[in-house]
Amino acid sequence: MKAKFATTCQACGEQIRPGKQITKDNGGRWVHNYCTETEIP
Ligand SMILES: [Zn+2]
Image 1 (cartoon, rainbow, N blue to C red):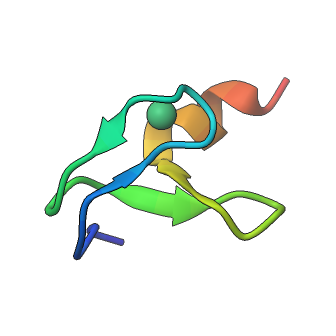
Image 2: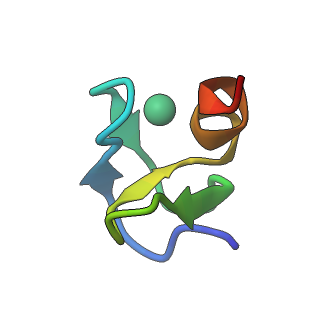
Image 3: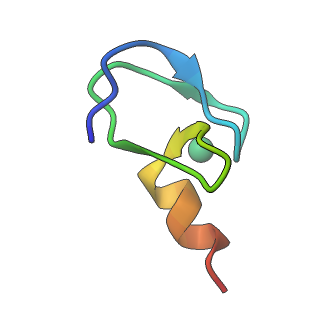
């Protein structure tokens, strides 16, 4: 989904800006879409 607010990605530590594609990790924290994809082995 698209971010509706600014937050920090818990996977890479970089800022998430509104409009970016984000998703929740297993812990329910917001991360970039591509950060969860790269975590999968
Ligand atoms: Zn990230």
